Length: 524
Image (cartoon, rainbow, N blue to C red):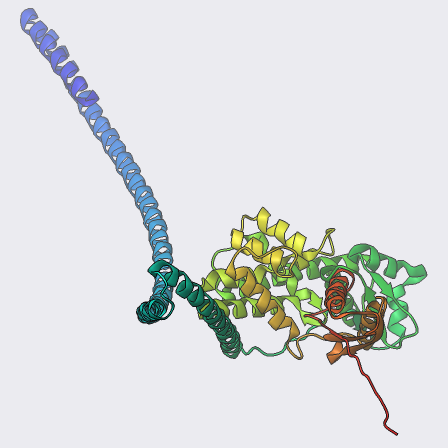
């Protein structure tokens, strides 16, 4: 546009000069004007060339800017496409999981439908039998009425009353017998069915016995290392205890150091730190802090990985990241020698198998089983039982109400509000009480048996007490002249309640009260 303006101005100037030259008619003036016109033409050409160069430069700049904008737009579009692709893949995975869940539910519904059809057929058979029985009863009534009217000369109403009274007595007895038989049959079938379900669940999950204890003793290459751990004037051992938060016990035990601390995570970090320092040989405060920081980070990563691995193995779906860390902390918690994380996974699988057997939600049962002892991950840091702490944690992270109730009721502290809670409690007992699952020291074992016998002997009328089956059963022999049969039932219940309130024990304890009266005579 600027070039066009310049050209227009030059043309106008040339026209004006030409007119002036024509009007003057002077050759000299004409020559001067021609020279000026020539110079003006050269300037005009130069201006045109400069304008063209500037236009070409501007054109290149515009083209480069356009290319840059196109590249940026292309990159943004590619990122958006990748994001959408990832979202679509996640949605596809969710749809696959939902499809699997729907298929499982469909199978469960088919099983229930078949069960209902079977029950309906049985009910129809019973209805037919009842109708036949009613017809037979009506025939008997008519016959009795006729006989009574012929023999006694009674009216129809009087005869009907006598027959009905007699029939009611016969039917009451028959009904009582029938009800008793059905109740016994139902109990027998229920017991057999429950045994089959438990056997199938245990057979499908035949896990190895796992026993892992948190190590609190560090082996030393020689006794000289104890002096290096203590350091000059106790500088090193004070630094270790201050940094790790544990107590080191260095006594006369050869080639070993005992680590004492209630927190299993802190004790494990201290153990690893001390082992690295002993193997390295450089034991000094700056090195202690460096190794402790490194071991802490490694253990935190290991805890998170253990939690993620447990969640993946049990297949319980999405879970809060903080809960994953708490699950991983169970790896370093033991109960009577049984690793808490292995126990929780075992309970999850058993509860899931039991849920499948009776048509309940397997995933929800596994989730409740894995989280049932989550309170043990922090019970050394908070006041209260691991059940109360577990309920608080599950509520905090908005877990399913079924899971919360399973945590609260798996030790009988509250009543279970759903079938899955009962399954988790049963799986917990199976995992803890099976042979080899748990162990304890000889001293604590003997102490527990003695405590069990002493507790039972405190009750009035008890003659002798025997702890049997490694403390899983206690038999109380009472004095028959002081304790009646009814009081023996009450005594068993009272002892059971006192054991639950005062003792800590794995699994269950069976209480048996024996009352026996013997009369002897000697013939001479």
